[in-house]
Amino acid sequence: MEAALEVTARYCRPQMEQYGQCVAKSPASWQRDCHQLRMSMSRCAAAHPIVRRIRQRCEEPFAAFEQCLRENPAAVVKCSEQVDAFLLCADRVKVST
Image (cartoon, rainbow, N blue to C red; front, side, top):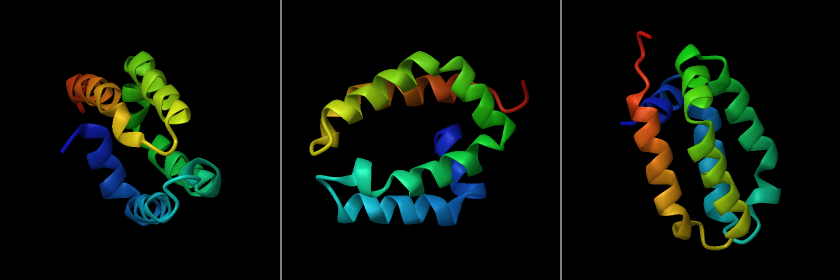
């Protein structure tokens, strides 16, 4: 599993599950309906050092992914190229650096 997702799943599982359930229930309005859950998951994940390193080193591909999500709120599958670029970057960030 990719480093950021692994850390989030390990340390923030309840927040991640709640956010995922909300997104699944609200495909057309998930950005608005799930915003607080997303923020809760983000705050939890941001507390971990590897996530901070990933956010710093992968800022551009993450921003492109978020922009794609904003532009395609009802068709998030259109963002697979952006998420792949972000995950590739995240995988390159070492836990021990």
